[in-house]
Length: 257
Image (tube, rainbow, N blue to C red; front, side):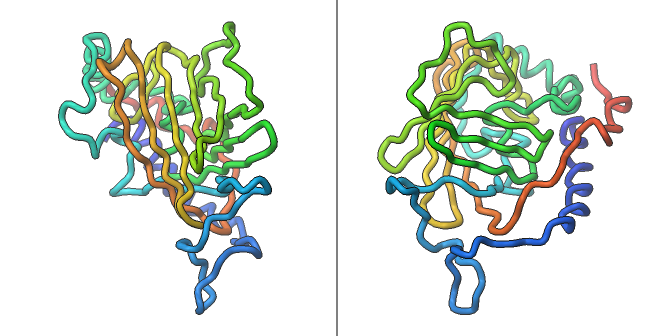
């Protein structure tokens, strides 16, 4: 098991103990089956302008079907073709057992990796801005929907700079301005400062939101590649406080080159 996976494995057990802090309170408008349980297959809610409402508390697939260890796990050989630079960096990370993984030192996981830790995250839609609130590492992401362009002097960041727009029933997010040598998953698939991530979010019913993710990074990959992440609504769930450095006891014990 790599260092970052150890950090998250320990945190999973810790988080499961804390989940009892919150009383689950599904919204009064939640669709229900005849026996009163939440109907995740019910109709997707709409916003005032008729668009699918992507707001909610969401979870990525959990072990053993999770994408955190390897974002490319469902893709065919040849779908993801690394450049010489990326291949060397990937092999270096593998040989070092992921010792330098930024998440092991409580840095934000970035995009699209922040979707996949075994913790919920919340999407909040407002006029002109969509906010992501991640329980993991207690961080956030801003998606500007006011029609702005990416500022030419935007500082590279872990989460990048995101703008969003609607294309039919899909909410499309374009993100760039990342720090160099990002980690896309625990396996160490790299992203560079030239990476552009496109996400197409479709809420197909009340409890399911599919995110089609396309990685376009000419420094790291010979061609763009895509995968689809299925999210499930945590109806009645909410976020709890996650202070990574409070209990980050693994760092002194990391092994690798």
